[in-house]
Image (cartoon, rainbow, N blue to C red; front, side, top):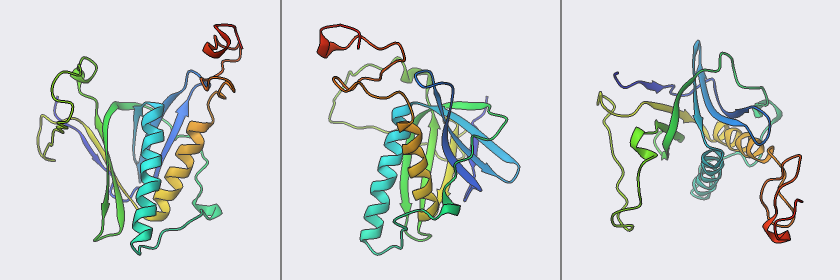
Length: 194
């Protein structure tokens, strides 16, 4: 099967959202432009890290003189659910976040998780960070979703993503682990249900 590259440029919509009840949610990134729609699944922590890093990147470019909104206007806040049909194109393995100074845009790339990502061990030199680079025309690379976001759209994405992550199960006040409606075995209470 040949590689699929979903390049949305400046999308009409780029959001993080979930399906399912807290504790069993599936997280998605979704990009839409015109009649094109793609949804990719990822882990909660990936959504959180992407939003946090995007917020840090916005702060850094603002510090360097780029106009970045500090707060959203009511029209910028996308609170709508994920678009239908919700069909998972792939599961995200790695993501890239970059700033394009020529166009004052953030570039987000989400790459398909390689089949051997699940089986990788921590063998090798821990100080050596090797990332595989694939040319856009490489037919053997992982599937890819790429979007470009203005600073205002990036701020809107990050704020929604952080709200989505925080909307899960509340943390245990003693150990910080997520609470299920039936409670959980709290290590700070010596295994008693809290």
